[in-house]
Image (cartoon, rainbow, N blue to C red; front, top):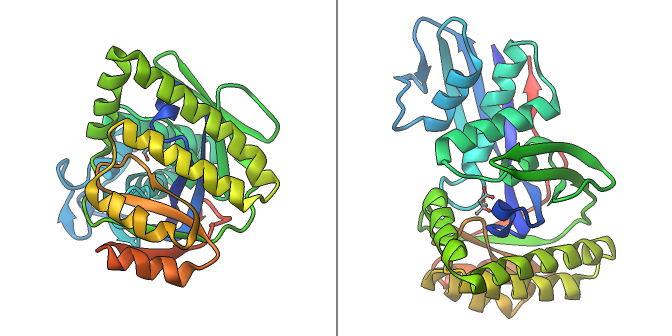
Length: 308
Ligand code: MEV
């Protein structure tokens, strides 16, 4: 039997813009998904026959990577699904790392690249931000060019992403889940339509890219005021792109009173917000007052873990 786990993630800067090759910054957080995989008589997930409809990421991981005997898979996840916290990347990376271990082909780069393939096949469109962050742990900078602390390069449909390790100070973050499930594929498609037909949308995407690059320096300098200010600016641009929701806005408004900065995180349209603060308890309460579910989180320095 093999046990594997992977963290969730939070995008601090650059979601959506990263799909078009702009930079993004994401961190792994201490909510994990665990899978246990053993050879068995039939392909099952949590005791039920594996089904495309319910187990898309696991099924596509198996289709891509496994040619052997049937597998019985058990899963446990502390990451709420469709919350913007990377539940799909987390289950994918945990499953892919376990399968690569069984294939004697386990390496961080292989996990990141195969997990991206699985997410891409399943969602129809994705950048490698979520899967690479969850694979590597800590912080990840996605950019157009190779810089120091380079990890790997991923290319799809003419877009090249260079993934880097990013040193992140120990940020005090609170996530507010709206309880409304976001649909990443739908939100990416919505922004893509806007991007294709509207030059203003293309300018907004470029501006998000600039904000993300400024955030790299602010994070290096541990300048929380500037990081927060940049988060607020990034949030305004995400709102212009049409990925906000009244419940996200209500949580952001409440949490702002106690935060350096607050923004939508992930695909939006529901899903979650992230706040940078010194007052995590107050922010958590403010989020709950607005009807959200609060998660006080820490950065996970560990990405995937496999125990043979
Ligand atoms: C989703 O967590 C982040 C998006 O930028 C999509 C992607 O990068 O695959 C919205």
